Structure formats: C-alpha cells, structure tokens
Length: 365
Image 1 (cartoon, one colour):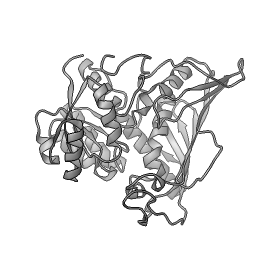
Image 2 (cartoon, helix red, strand yellow):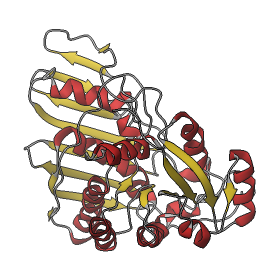
Image 3 (cartoon, helix red, strand yellow):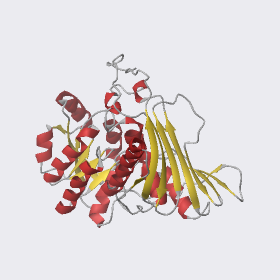
C-alpha cells in the first residue's frame, strides 16, 4: 500500500455516520475535512472526527484533498461531482449517480477526459453477502442461471428517518433510493440489462414525518411509491424486481436466484455480510453456505477504498461510475416503460466487476 488517498466529505447528513464509522478502518484513505451547507452541523462533525470543517468552495479548492465523498441530496450529485472533477479530485458519490442518464453522462465523460475516477454507492455489494452469492453462482452450484426474483418493501422511510422529505422528491422513492442495491446486484450476477418493462404507481395515502423535530410535517409525494419491473439481461436471464413504500407486511422472498440445479437465497444487498443460503437438486434442504468471497466486516466507504487501491494498481474499480450509470439507465427505462406503456431498450452496457477474493482488504488487493 502506498500513500493514502486523502478524502473530503461533502454532506454530513444521516448517511455520513456510516461512512465515518468505516473510514478509520481503512488505512488507504485519510479523512482531511468535511463540508455541508449547514456549517454548524459541519463544525460539529469535524470536531467529532478530529478534522477541519470547511465551506464547500474551500474544500473543493483544497490541494491537500485527492478525492470527494459526495453525500449531498440526489439532485445535487452531478453539480457537486462535476465541480470536484474540475478541481482535479476523484469522486465517490452516494446513489443514485444522478437524476437521469442525460445528466450523468457528461460528468463521466469529463472524468475520463481528465484521467480521474468516479465511483458510486452501493458498495454494500462488495461485502461477503453478495460476493459469496456471486462466487457460488459463478462456480455452477445451481447449474445455469434461469431467473431471479427481488422484492423489497416497507411502509415508507418517514417512519424512521428524521428528515425524509427528499425521499419523496425526484431522485428518491423506492426505485431510485432502494433500487440501486438490488439492480447493482443483478448486474453483478448476470451482466448488463438490454430491455425492460414495468409499472410504477402511487397511492393517495397521506404521509407525515413520524420521528424527530419535524414530526407531524406533511410530506408532498412527487414520485411513484410502488414499482414492479421485468428485466432481460444480455445473457438471457430474466429477472423481476418490486420495490415499494406501500407495503405494511409481506412473506415474499427478498432476493432469490433460480438455476437449472438449485436456488440461491441472496442476503439483503442493503447490508454487507448476512449469510447466503443454498438449495440444490442433490441437497434439497435449505442450508447456509460458508463465506467464500467479499470484503470482511465491510461498511460504507469500502467502495472508495477499493477505488483508491485500483488507482494505485491501475485496475478497474468495482463500485464504478459506469456500473452506476448502467443501473441509472435501467431505472430510467423502468420509469419510461411504465409511463409510455411499452418495452424500453437499454442502450448502455457494462462489464461485470471482478469478484472480491475472500479475506482481501480493499487497501491491499
């Protein structure tokens, strides 16, 4: 491992807590400063982390900082990311990469022209859960893959999040907020999606903030809150996905892969390290399988650590902007398929990222 990649964090809202928990465990990264439009909050976090609090402009202009973790709201991802690239810094952003493919593509092209990297959440898919399932699938444990089913649902983020209004604005909702975890996993398992069909709806249920200082505040709903889609992958596998803010309870399997010789129960890609379960023709009783791939004890920020090591060793990074762009185009196609009531082709393609070797550290492999 060489010199650590220095990091500035822009946006210190709720999700930043999970990044700050991981960063001290990653010697390939060094946190230097934080910034937020709420400067008082930025100062509080800076004291907690033992770093400087800067304005956004000063953080972007700071030559000590090599890379930016962009944790702003989705509507600001491209603006902040583009400014960071122009300032000569690599970018790792929370999902979604942008609000639309048309908005995201110039940012990726800019990064390529400047020789800089763009990475994007979710990096949960680099943990032992999804990676063990991927290793199992690649090994032929269930024969040839045929299909997969994903179902994620909840009544709505207002039940737990202290400031959930942005989840119901463009760039939020179950598709753009939760969809990237599952769609990124599907791309890792089966490769790029070539066409989609789907239906997206919303109920007229009144929503209010239920916790924190904003409790009781009405939430305007500007996005669809229940989305179902059928995806055709380039390798011929068909996958189905439902994500919803409308479901109070369900018995639907969260994530299963079906093959000619068995089934893999994939742990929730919103988490890093839950166990994988397997059923096969020869062993029809469901059983947990040993962990065989993925970063151990991982947390948010491991995708940037993987990117830092990839920069050092001149290899592709796994939680890449190109993977995130393909997932973004798939989500956009699902929306269009619903609104236009037709099957929509997906133009972009992407290589499946390499499996993370079991026991590897993102700073050393």
